[in-house]
Amino acid sequence: MTTITDVDPDCCPLCGQENGCGMRAGSKTCWCFSERLLPGILERVPSEARHVACLCKSCATGRTDLQDVALRIEKLLAGRR
Image 1 (cartoon, helix red, strand yellow):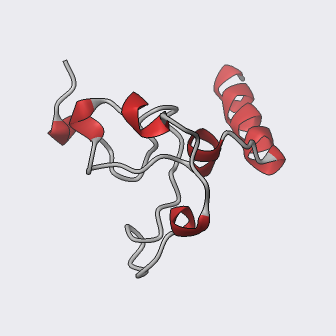
Image 2 (image 1 turned 90 degrees about the vertical axis):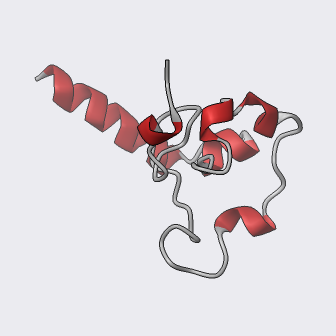
C-alpha cells in the first residue's frame, strides 16, 4: 500500500517520470498553468498522490515529446547493458 510519504513530488504519479513542476522548482508558475489537460486525467491520480505530486506534461496533455521518449528508451536500454 502506497502512502503520502512514499510519493515522490518530483515524479509523475501516473508514469513515474520527472514531472517538471515549475512550482516545485521554485517558480511562481508552472507549464500546466497554460496547458489544456486531458479530460478526466486528474481523476486517474491515486488519492495518496493528490496535492503531493504533479503529472508530467505527456500524461497531463496526452501529447508525447519525442525527445522525452528517446530519453526514456535510452534509460531502459542502459539498464539492460
